Structure formats: structure tokens, C-alpha cells
Amino acid sequence: MDIENSKKQMRKGVLEFCILAIISQGEIYPSDILRKLKDAKLIVVEGTLYPLLTRLKNAGLLGYSWKESTSGPPRKYYNLTTEGEAFLQELKGTWEELAHAVGFATKNIQLS
Image (cartoon, rainbow, N blue to C red; front, side, top):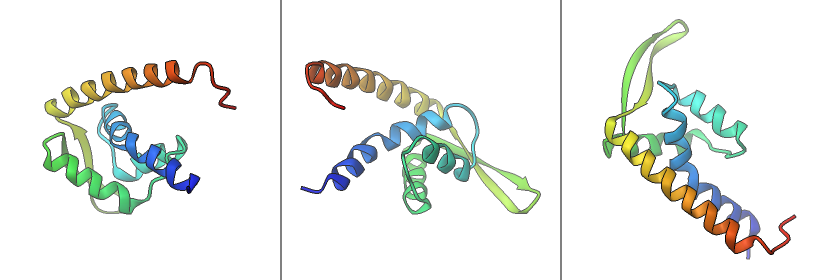
């Protein structure tokens, strides 16, 4: 069994939740999302982020606006829609339940 693949799948499972949580803090440019994810050790590349943003936008969870840039063409900034905010709250509840369940299931296991 490949441990790196297992780690990757665990990160992938929470990526959508993390992206929505980051965007919920205010309008944001994709490269800033990438930076925050990398800072959190959820290593993501543009080729992963942009399709996810498109999927979330097509699902009605994200909106965007174009803003002028001082260093090139206008930039697309993402924000959560009302539906996106509700969806994020549902995911947050699920995350809390999951974190509690994992904590309970592993409380007697030495994980370090």
C-alpha cells in the first residue's frame, strides 16, 4: 500500500471544505487561495484549484467579480454565494462530527 497516496486522498477529501472556508473570509484571488492552502500544508497546484473553483461556481456556491490589476489584465476574485455559505455551514457540522468520531476512535491509540 502506498502511504503517499493515502495522505493525498485524505487531503483531497477536505480540500473543498478548506477552499470554501478560505473564500468565506472575503473576496479572494485564486493565487491567494493557493498560498493559504500551501501555508496550511495542503499542497495544491493550479491544475487542481481551477477545476474545483469552476465546479463550485457551476454548483452555485461561488460567485466572482472582475477587478482591475495594476500589473496586467483584470483579475477574477471569488466570493461565497448565499447557497455557498449554507453549504459551508453543513460541511462544518459534518467536519466537527467527523473530527469527534476520529478522536473517539483513536483515543487509545498512540498516533505519534
